[in-house]
Image 1 (cartoon, helix red, strand yellow):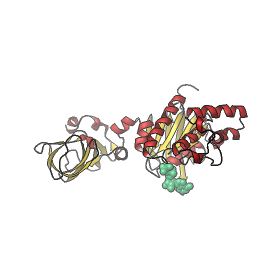
Image 2 (cartoon, rainbow, N blue to C red):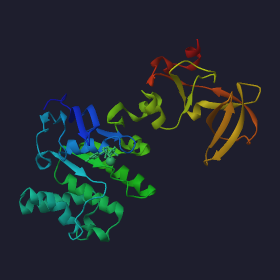
Image 3 (spheres, helix red, strand yellow):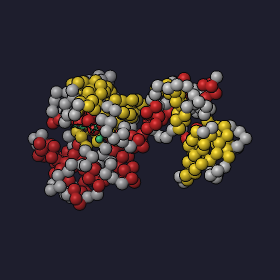
Image 4 (cartoon, helix red, strand yellow):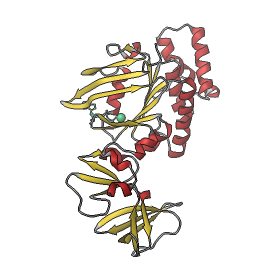
Length: 342
Ligand SMILES: Nc1ncnc2c1ncn2[C@@H]1O[C@H](COP(=O)(O)OP(=O)(O)O)[C@@H](O)[C@H]1O
Ligand SMILES: [Mg+2]
């Protein structure tokens, strides 16, 4: 394998189910050791894509290559990938160690080697002390780690995770996602993570692929995705945005919208900026979300420090706005706003 060979290459993947195109000509390359999330709303085709990569579902068109080898025609057990399922799928009657050993047993690995590899991977995920526990005797987070261990014990070239944290409570979710990211980086294993949770995707990924209707709308590093959403869909899906006809709140042009982040709507004294009135204030702790109506348009602003009262007259200043023509980013609008207006 040369250094330019991707860890995973999806080329033109397509899947039709029930007469509908669920995954639509999807192409994506992952660098070796890269973690890429497939992020998108429920039903956009994330799981279907992952199941094709794993070999549980046959594509209607397209190919899948792992480290340069075409695996499209191989069954799941012959692919160099391992999957962690949303519901963990642990055998309830087997101990943690037996669950983790299971795929090696099926692959007829020698008993001594199985014991060594299971011990090693339980150590890696911090579950050595639960080797002899059954799934019902350990917490949800520990079950998730057992499920991760069962995938990693196979020494896969590709790790596939389908909403692995969705059964955990919010605090635990944050901790386990950091553990997964840490292990993934230590092993340097190419990983696809499916999630509908943008915060999760942004927190752990090298790059995020935003999916909509079976297609990838954008694949970028998390910060870039937030700074320069390539489509109106991505701008609306990642973080929150005001969708305006024009940045001066005037009538605007045909098929053009402007997206403005709430942190770029700045409230100033009433005699400055565009005149507006506060209609709602939602405290969030370290900042407040303030709704303002200006020139008949409702805008949301994030305000830290002193918050205005409902009914107060304020001025509105828009510091940054992105222009979308027919739903696609006009990259010229990434320049500071004074220059756009010119
Ligand atoms: N076997 C199937 N037959 C028909 N439609 C299916 C089948 N499996 C999934 N779908 C549909 O495909 C769409 C995408 O499903 P899925 O990939 O599970 O979405 P996601 O994981 O992004 O939530 C959904 O609308 C779902 O109802
Ligand atoms: Mg899914």
